[in-house]
Image (cartoon, rainbow over all chains, first blue to last red; front, side, top):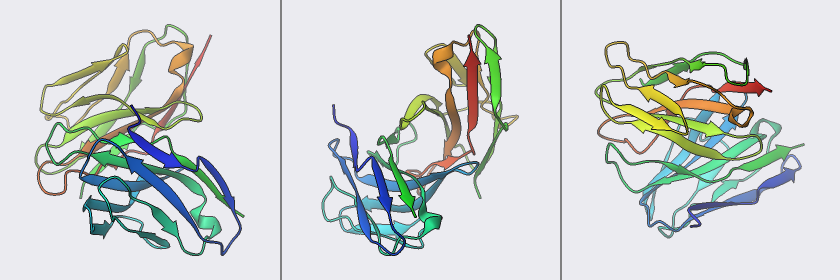
Amino acid sequence: NAGVTQTPKFQVLKTGQSMTLQCAQDMNHEYMSWYRQDPGMGLRLIHYSVGAGITDQGEVPNGYNVSRSTTEDFPLRLLSAAPSQTSVYFCASTPGTGVGNTIYFGEGSWLTVV
Amino acid sequence: GNSVTQMEGPVTLSEEAFLTINCTYTATGYPSLFWYVQYPGEGLQLLLKATKADDKGSNKGFEATYRKETTSFHLEKGSVQVSDSAVYFCALKKSGGSNYKLTFGKGTLLTVNP
C-alpha cells in the first residue's frame, strides 16, 4: 500500500540552488497537486494537474515549476531556491471530482533554504 | 471565494477531557468537508469527512456534523488521550468544477497532558 510517495523527506538547500521534489502515486489517480504548509497559514496550493500533460497554477505558484509526463509522477521543481521557500511540502492525489472522493497526501518533504 | 476558519490554538487539555475544535466555512453550493490530522513529524492523514448537510463523519472517537444552517463542521471528542496530540486541519472541497482541490483552515495545535 504505497499510496502517495514523496522524496526526499528532508533537504537543506543553499540560496540559489535548484532541486526537484519527487512525488509518485500508485493508485492511478488523475488529479495530483502540491501544497506548502507554513506556520499559522495552513496549507496553500502551489500547482496542480488534472491529468498527464496538463498542469495549472494554484494559489502560490511563483518560484516553482511542475510537469506531468505520466499519470504516476508529479515532480515539483525549485529553480532558484530562496529562504521564503523554507516550508513543508505535501503532494496529494485524488481519483476524480466526485463529491465523496478523498484527497490523499504524501508524508511531506521538509525543506530548509539557508 | 471559498474559505475555512478554525479556532486559533494552541489548545491544551488534560487526558480524558472533552474536545471541541470549531470550524466554519464560506463556500458556494454544497462543499464536502474534511478534518485532517498531522501527528508530530508526520504527514497529513484524513481523520473524517462529510459530503452533505447533516452528515456526521466519525473516526477514532472523533465526530463532526455538517451543519449547513450554521456553515460549521466542529470537531469533537468525548475523552481525549495523550496520543491525540497533533495539529488538526479543517478543509473543504467545493462542489462541481475544480473540486479536486482543498481549501484549508490554518490548523489547530492540540496538546493533551497526562
